[in-house]
Image (cartoon, rainbow, N blue to C red; front, side, top):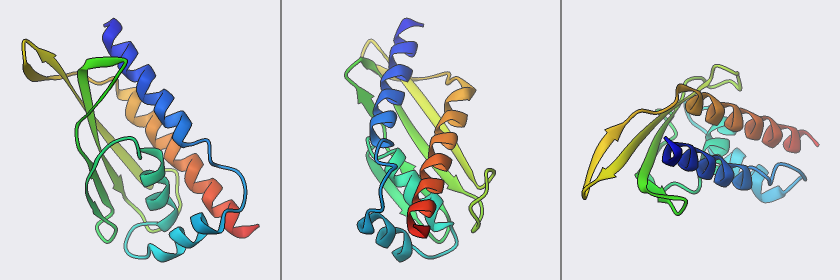
Length: 142
């Protein structure tokens, strides 16, 4: 259980660091949002990529609104790994427009086996994405 807490703490520590670039009116960020047009909300799309940038990207479909990340282990919990899938469910910037599924495995004698994930983890990631998306939109309006 301590390893689970360490992994979650490391994950959110990494996410907090990636989400610290909220302020300012960086033209590169605004341009990146404007260039991503399709079925998914461009702010949620960019915010999802920014928030989970510490995970390796497998596939990103802006028209379908799906971002799939690969397994990643953090130094604080090397015997555990996580991956995530982000679903952008709406073309509008709405609180219910993003869903994050998180998966976790533990290494037991050299074999990766599925392990439980606290349901709050996905909700916290969704909230971080929403905060980032709102900040991106606000920086565009400035």
